[in-house]
Amino acid sequence: MIPTDKTAKQIYHEWQAAPRVPPRGMGQRVALLNVDVQRRYTDTEAFASAYTGHPRQFEAINTLAETVRALNMPVIWTYVAYLPSGVDAGWWSKLSDNEMSIHKVGHDSPQAEIDPRVTVDDSDLKLHKRMASAFFETHLLSYLNWHHIDTVIVTGGATSGCVRGTIVDAMSYGYRVIVPEECVTDREESAHYASLYDIAFKYGDVKPVDEVLADLSERKPA
Image 1: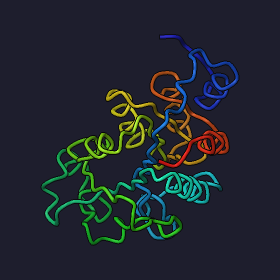
Image 2 (image 1 turned 135 degrees about the vertical axis):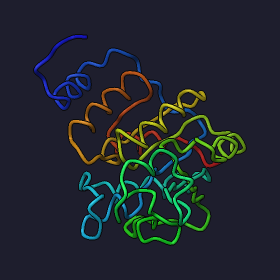
Image 3 (image 1 turned 120 degrees about the vertical axis):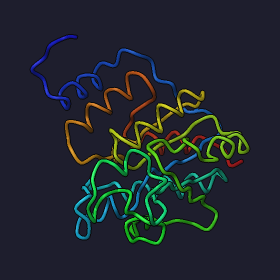
């Protein structure tokens, strides 16, 4: 282990300036995967579990969604929710037991609602998940295969949790992964930047959202 006095943010920005692996690039068939952009994690006025992101986060996610829809490619919104008893939450049901415990988030809970600042179209897929990765025990893999997807653009939160877990699985299944930096966020800055560094080094391309949109503009509608 290499010791350092640098912050995770400094290490990530040094990586940005001089990356040590080549970019994976964007393929021809793209899906936008918005991970847990739900009020439990976005509505800071209502829920103590929520956290703020980049000022452009919601506007940028909406622009990405509009662009991907215009290409006739999939837009997906995941959300976390559980049975009233919480028995389907696994070990997460054992970590705490109060009104904000994650296993208390029911399917009809305001915490499970997609944030109203993003626009969900009738053609989009809303995907219920129970654990960190959007791939775990969901039909996401078969959905992406049916649409011949080779690249997933991942937004949402938390960078160090469900976003990272989803990205690791996406790369493991052979997908190219792109992360628009302004569109992912976390409760803690250090966890956020440590995860961005880890993702950029091992799992996918972390890029400014405007670069991602420029790459999408080169794609033709399906």
